[in-house]
Image (tube, rainbow, N blue to C red):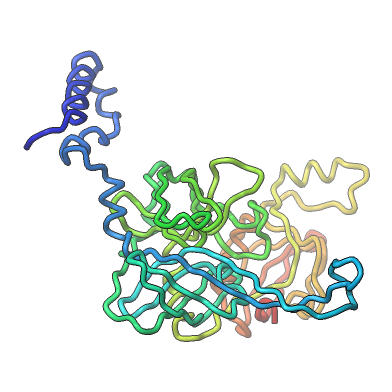
Length: 369
């Protein structure tokens, strides 16, 4: 095997390191150098991107809105002359079926009147939105007029570990076929903790650069398998991006491709995680609204009207201890348990009220019903 100049330089550095570093330290060195040397300068990133690059698409959208414009000042007003305005948007997506099924974010195609899919080879295809689920920010598009399209390989996000390589592919700011590299920073980052309280998601957090236009594109592992869908960046932070785990998307994408609505059972309470430490801090505060029990669970701080919880008789100050026998430790876990329940199927919620255990029978309703 003939090595490039870069390859020889890496081999030389590796020999020096092996000479002066003890074996325990040497064993901890990442294998990137070995990978580059073995492939004569070709990185694992380029190989991973080569596997999926032709299946990553750009999604252009158009939406026409009507606004009323003040005839004197030109500003939008409650009364005035109606004018139509064309809004354009752009995002990314990737092909998961050879017949033209594309997975992307719901917000990419939100209320779009026209969807155009641009393939890497330059072809422009008309897209039709098959289904949208705003709660998980997932959408499925189908394109017409094309067969035997290239597809990505879907990985297993349950196998992802903190520190794994993360490769983001997409079209940020309209710059097609852009690739960025980072690592998986953390797993199971609840959407509520990143300011997305209207979602039900546990994100993969990464430091791979994700910019506007990346939304809907794939997050890859070192093998070129899709482990997530790039979906969100924080405007107040640098180097932090989030992706929907691909295992979450698989089942939902199948439903959306069939044109089905995704069900999200809803309890109807505002809640916070409760621990003995939090209880002690509250109970020692002379201005506390009420005393709370010194236990682990979820404290109900408000019961919303006309919801499953209000119909079942739940109250502010109740502490949720378990659901159908599953012990509840925090608010995110309760949300996950509810997501895995069924609309109109009764569940038993064990609560602590006035120092006594009670069983409340709740029939979840559909979220946003």
